[in-house]
Image (cartoon, helix red, strand yellow):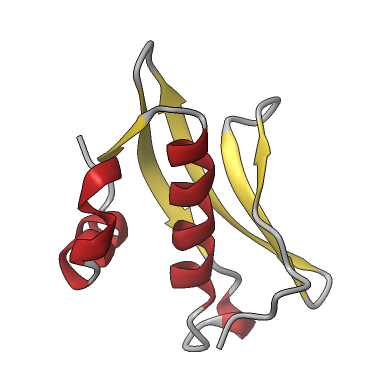
Length: 94
């Protein structure tokens, strides 16, 4: 279950969504277009893998993208898989 004290943030300087976990950072790189964010790579530090952190990161990123009135383009396999497993997120997919 996601920790409600953790928040995904949009680091526009680095073009990535970030989630701080145990003094490490999980992130999803993106390219921004006029109407969508193309998530090109998702990475969770090796020591943190297998805990659902990447899913928590993408769920939070999709929430930020939706709130901004944008769409997401799945440019990496993790996001493709996430969207397939979570059809409730279809409104934000481009």
